[in-house]
Image (cartoon, rainbow, N blue to C red; front, side):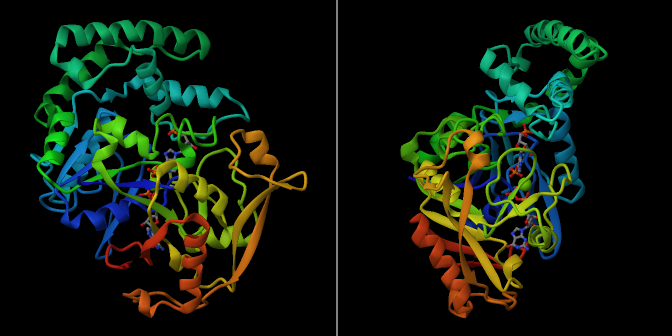
Length: 424
Ligand code: GDP
Ligand code: IMO
Ligand code: MG
C-alpha cells in the first residue's frame, strides 16, 4: 500500500508545503484532503518563493499529478487566481490538476458571512482567515451546500444558488444589515467558472483508489494543523475541517488501510495565527525574537503569528491522535542563536499535573506550562547536510523530542529552501 500522509502537528504553518514538495520528488500523485484557501503553503526552490493555497504542493514537481479531494472547499476566485499565477511562472496545470466532483464550492455569500460574523463577535472572534471556510462547511453539514458535480446540470445548479441566496440574503440584510447579493451575478460567475475548470473535474475517489491498487506512490497533504481540527483541536478556536489523519480518508475517499506512513510536520517551536488558547505563548522579547528570526507572518493573511516554545504535551497528543510515526522537524535554524531553549513537558492546574491534553479551552487558559531547559547549540546550522555533521546539542534536542513523543525525527529542515533539508 502506497499512501504517505503528511500533516500539520501543531496550529498550522509548520512548513507542510516545504516538506510535501521535498518528499514528492519521487511521487506519482499529491492529494489535498481538506481546508480551502485559508491555507498558505510556502515552497522555496533555489531562492524562488511560491505560495500555494488550494493547489497541492506537488505542482512544482514536473509529472506529479495533483488532486484536490472531496474534503476540500473550493473558492473559484482563489483557484483561478492561483492557476493564473502558476501559468505566469511557466507552470501549466493542464492534465496535472484533478478536482473531485464531490468537493463543495465556496460561494460569495460564504466569504461575506465569514467576515460579517467575525466582525459581530466583539472580543470573541475566532480570528478566521475570512475565506468563507466555516460557512461553506456549515452548508455541507446542513446538506444545502453546492458541489462541483451540481454544475453538470446548469438548471438545477442555478436553482440551488437561488434557493441558498434567498436565505443568505435574509441573514445578511436582517441580521448584519448588509447589502443583498445579486443572484444573477453569482449565477453568471459560477457558470463561467464551470466552463473554465470543466476539464479538471473527475471522480478523484475512483482515480486515487485505482492508483493505489496499481502501486503508485501517493502523498496526501494536510492543511492547517491538528490543534485546529474541528473535533480534536482547541474548539471553538479551530477551523471547520479535520486536518488530522482520519480526515485524509474521508477527504479523499481512501481506506485507512491504504496509508502506510504518517509524517507529522513539527516546527521546532510553536506558532499560532488567530485567537484561542496557546499555553506556551511568549508575549515577551523571546517571543518577539522567534517571530523576527522565523519571519513569522501568515502566508495567507500576513498577520503576525503568535510565538512560543515547543509544547511537547500538545505534540504528544498530536502524535497519538494521528498515529504519527515520523517527525519532520522544521525551522530548527531559528533556534541557532538561543543560549537556552525551553520545552514544555507538563501542564499543571491547581498544583496537579494533568494526564491528558485538556478538551476545554477554560482549562487550557488556566494551566501553567512547566518547562525543561536545555542548552542551545549556539551555532549556525547552515550548510549542514547530514545528521553526522549536526552539533551534539542539536542532536540532543531531537532526541528529547523523540523520547517524549515516541515518534522518530526523520527529517530536519534548516532553511526555507528545498535543498536545506536533511533526511535521516
Ligand atoms: P505551511 O502552511 O505548513 O506550509 O507553512 P507556511 O508556508 O505557512 O509557513 C512556514 C514558513 O517557514 C514559510 O515561510 C517557509 O518558507 C518557512 N520555512 C519552512 N521551513 C523552514 C526552515 O527550516 N527554516 C526557516 N528559517 N524557514 C522555514
Ligand atoms: P496552513 O495550511 C495557520 C486558523 C485561522 C483561525 C482558524 C479558523 O497554512 O497551515 P478559518 O479561516 O479556517 O475558518 O480560520 O484557523 N487557520 C490557520 N492558521 N495556518 C493555516 O493554514 C490556517 N488556516 C486557518 O487563523 O485561527
Ligand atoms: Mg501556512
